[in-house]
Image (cartoon, rainbow, N blue to C red):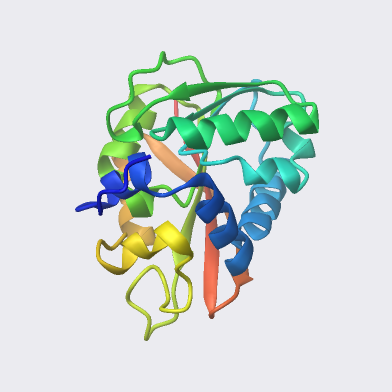
Length: 219
């Protein structure tokens, strides 16, 4: 990790935010458990046809502590731009008795091989050039994509509320992740031949909502 104050959201995630601070932040705002349940519900309603799963922007793998039984028989590859996050994820997977592969990779310009039946992308698009992220998923030929994005109350424009920062997470008081418009996201997937086949949402603290969507490649 670097102690230099990040100038961009990418720098914050790639080498400034610590795994401990990230875990504490997600525990404080209740989103890790909520997102895990949301993905689990969508997965059971719209199960993909194959077992090969990409979890892009996987972070420290907190979802491994909140069930994830629907993905128990899958061959999971977790990617992130931060190798320390992936090391924490591997430790969690080992404690949970789960076999996962980890790869350092950038969803904006992914270099991994196109070998996935499904992808899970949870609160990642807000932190990257999300259109490039959609381009990468289409380029990888992913058949079904499970996406979770954040919706804020009407009077809260910033992704993060003032009470949220924990330690190095305070970087986001200076560099701001951006909310993703659901209609624009759906249009971007449609431009690559995907159709939204399912939606679901769950409320979290601070009046926010986690919005889940499932995109299926046509043809």
